[in-house]
Image 1 (tube, rainbow over the protein chains, first blue to last red):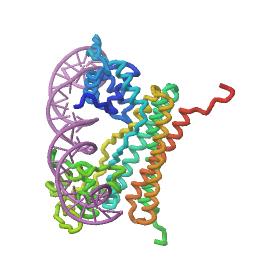
Image 2: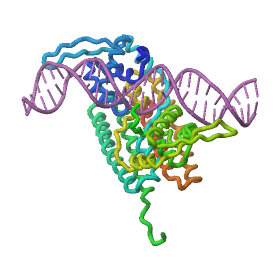
Image 3: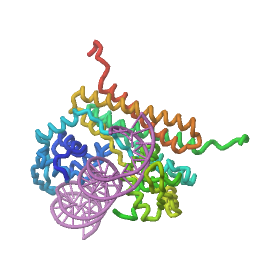
Image 4: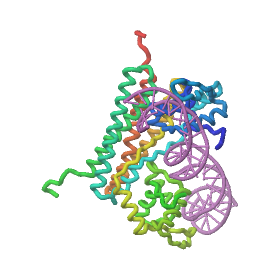
Length: 187
Length: 187
DNA sequence: GATGACATGTAATTGGTTACATGATTAG
DNA sequence: CTAATCATGTAACCAATTACATGTCATC
């Protein structure tokens, strides 16, 4: 593994540590409830990434002894780490995104699917999307109500909500298109 | 590499070959202009995947000698391959999607960004999204006009268009939120 | 004494991209 | 003669996930 190469995941950790020092385990929980919906990080990934960031001098660890819980290593963003974070943030490069949407892959070959299975696929997907949409909506509401100053987290949650709204209306459009209104007397 | 394991990419190739036999190179071009926007495949990936599908007996190759072009190996979907494809298509499982949206990662830490750089990031992103949206729109129109029977490809293109529409309105919303209207006399 | 939250990590594997290597043929 | 398209592949690398391993402490 290249020691120098900085991935978006590495910057994500620097960004989270900029908010407050934290141990690997804590970062896992934080990442889960803040950035996971647009940048998932697993715990093991976080641990190995932190080790790399430490050798780069971007974070520094201090052992914290706890009496009521297992001891932990708390990481702090170093000045060098803060500089690297700023450089990345202020660089307006936008690497080409490659989105993978598994459900579209199946749908693309829908001609070959059994109609009932196709309908089930879309219905199941719609239900999930609706549930997720509601979660985003409640997060947005909660942030607006209780953390009105935290505008950026709210914006990213709003993104999720808007995307799912679009997804849902597309799903309705698609289902209507595939299940045409029952033919009347003229066909 | 596990010989048995079938990835969505492998099924994608089976699906494309179901439409018509093709060589690896051709599949690359076809994939590029059909499924790339929701399931990108590189040429090298296609070649190695085809080799695996061949050992599985899901595709069969025949050498085709060409006089005006380099010879090629044309792959055909076998009955076993068609069966595997059907099984996958008619299985309504929906694996959890993990979306990675790099621009949101930066935006999440927007508090730390220079306002002008943040504005530039969003403006650049908006321009790209608009251009992509227009491409999808023209594809949808073209398919509706010239291939009205190819409903599934049109639906997937429509998905791209709707998602980008949502993205664009979210971007406008976000830009308005971050660049509040110039204060009047009361502030 | 079982379960679950807290805590850290290693090793193997996966699914895929990038870089490299080679060569035929056609169009400008 | 040069560039572009057609054609096939190997090797190296990469980011990340999954499976595995170990252990503390608090609560039920």
